Image (cartoon, rainbow, N blue to C red; front, side, top):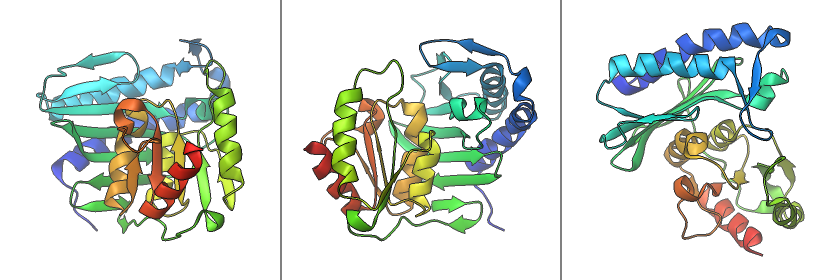
Length: 261
């Protein structure tokens, strides 16, 4: 059994503790309290409870680290090391009883992502990566797909939902990609989509308008699995723009070329 580094161990212990509440409430969806925090952007009592548990566990283990968290709390942003947390990525899936959602945590050190984990509590799948160590699913080493052409590739994507303004431009991009690939899949949780890319289960992924907590852990997973993560435009940083393309270098370049048209 692989020995985890102290930071990976801390993150793993935090998500395992927090996931007990997710599993409990996932089985009692009819009792779930839901409040609306924006058009088609929901936050549940479970999101808040999970974030509270993770924040408490990570603060106790690393009191000098800062925090960027989805549910409206950031602190110590001048710290050298910062936790980036999404308590439930794929909340809409969770609310509808679809077992495709995750807890995502990454560490940013001096503006560089150096470690991250993505945990699917329903499947008990623990994706993790650390700079220079590699990317793993539990104890199994991950590598991105080796497919070299879009016509053989299965591509995951994100689709803008109610309240987003770029529906028409997205449909044009999607139509362009559809003509080139073997298949498209929309799963509904960007962190897990990136984990699938790292595992070689899908060959590439693209989406626009994401937040740093959606993709930070997935970025290092894909890179440590031998893949490339870039912006939709070649000169943009996806962690800043929120526009991301991921896969092996050939697939990323091919997707960028199609999306640019």
